[in-house]
Length: 308
Length: 242
Image 1 (tube, rainbow over the protein chains, first blue to last red):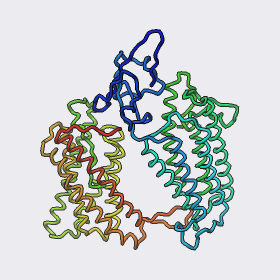
Image 2: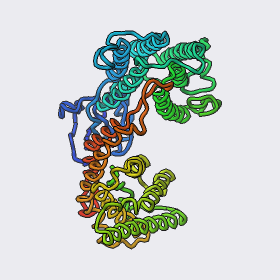
Image 3: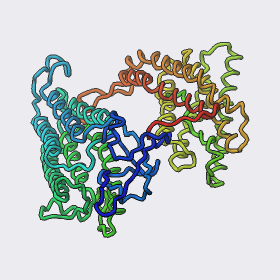
Image 4: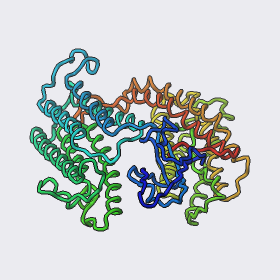
């Protein structure tokens, strides 16, 4: 939150900051100095400043003059807890699966019986699966570094433990079975199944990437504006006509393809759990689009066209 | 863990501040349900006492009460439904975990592994569960009827201090006793190779279940302690950040 001095009418603000839970007075500012000069452990990313103890946080861009306060402004402070940057979290949670899977693929010692150490699978679908899985997480890492524009700089520190347990845990579980010496390649439709699965997987990877690019282009560098996404010249974005969050739709498709390709129940579980989580996120995003934009296209569903 | 009670209605502390608009049907159903469950567990308690007084041994006791236990413990699944439709203000997940852990003990341990049915640890958790459930269901019943005797409130928020650790001990000892039989029969397990490319070892699963008591038990126990301080001692506890 910034305070602007105006040259015409000089308005002086006094600002007091109270703890949102206990209502203790934390500091009283008649010159505006950053809160963390008084409490150095509460750096900016941890601060939640609000007009009402149970209300929403004020944003960085909010200007003191434009807020509904008198000449003594009372704000409530909440400590958001230790924070960590989104980029750090993404790099860690995606780097893990990439490396872990490769360890299983190369049959590093202490995973399978010693006679299998450093051997390779005789099934070509296992090699294909490794390439797809690695490509997927490499793509995610590169998108984190070069494509995504994050609304928030940070998230609570405990999220990194939760997220890494989820991603790393599932990656290890899947990789263990796919790269196992006793792995059974797809039996129902054999080679044809694998081929179709690969096409679905690649199609959805390209689709997912197209959506990420389209979303990035909605927002000029450094800004935090929000706009309704629309289909572009890229055919993969035409799905915006039917769906609010096609990045999740394509992501689901990719993992569905990977499940088909490997015919591995742990992969199916991972796809199912991811589907549930992404549906929750998609519904939330869809709801906030509807709230924010009067003219939001009515034909769109959150994640699955017409269905969900 | 199965011996823990889920904390369905600490809302009695909100009774004065909040007006709960529950439909008359919901109240009637819940009252009936809680009376029925209190009665069921009382029947179970009496059947256990009668067996022990007549036979002077605990051997064969489980078998004699198995059907009543399975019935009333399984019926408790509807409590998840109560939370889901909102007539009971508790989290669906907490209730779900609670009921599932009971169902797990009854159906996947004691019912399926006959060789451990005469263990003392089984009697231990059965006694704990019975006492806990009778207290809990009568607490809910009296609450719904708006005539809660202090001694029931006292029991509900004090007995757990002894019941929880005893119940956990009973359950853990039972699972531990079951391990060799699980290993021998290979029950509920699946090995490679198979066309689903998954394997499951019930033996190691049980070991993980036992280990999970270590983080979970303290959390549930201290939650009840906090509730006790709020309800019985009227302390105001500022909750951690939501």
